Length: 346
Image 1 (cartoon, rainbow, N blue to C red):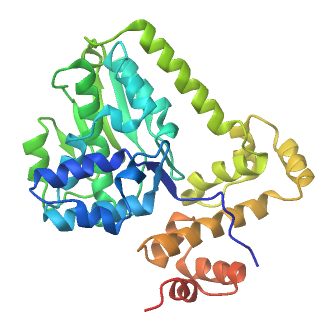
Image 2: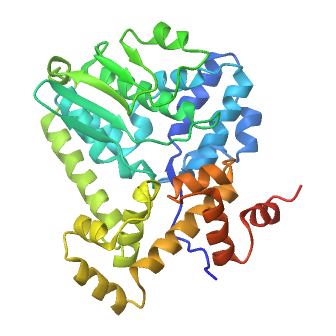
């Protein structure tokens, strides 16, 4: 029987993200008072330094905001009202970047300072013609997470436009999920080509757009803020044990099936035999960590989301829902259904 560990979570983000939801709700003439009370988002809570909101809680908040406003395309409005300051230190730093390119690099590199998700991390992929600013997959998509993709991509356009202080030309916007019933809202808000059912969630930036200058750039302030970001990023990662590092590397690749120790060792830049020896010295084995990571994530999904057991099985790389159910019962001495009913009795 396995016990859940405290260090494996689906993810979290800065409470600064709440402000753009509030602005979107206000734009629809609705009050946030009752909604924020229900989610325990008091002014004092929102003012706490480094306060975070779990990803599942943020998704439920966004879903509730969509219900409150009656606007299924609210994610686009949330992104439209997103400010760089909502990203905390990383956003303030990006606001001082010399160019759109430097700002995009900053938003991507320092993402762990304002948002983390075990599913992956955003990336800026540059080439000779321009760059893709890419948001990781959070499939399967449903009423609770489509708005996340929409708000993130729309927010990036808003953020980079804030840097160059002009409307930013986007060559292409790609979204993984199928075209929604409110697709017309994308055309109304975004004057760029749009592709649904794509392989990625991302926006395409030309070299011309990347080279746009920031009129508010101050070199000394920019370099001072960059130094602070690097220091904060180092603080977040320097105390991770080897077991924590391995678990964090296992989690994002589970969807593709159970990873091998060779794959993880390669990511750590050490031989597989060295990793095996070091794990043994800490009283564990690679297979144990795979099982523990799967169990921790499965427990979080069952506890914190509405995902079906079939969807959880797919996310954790099991060959079938039946294989997942057998493994979970072996780990927890209960079936996933019994586990969920114990947590959320009717």
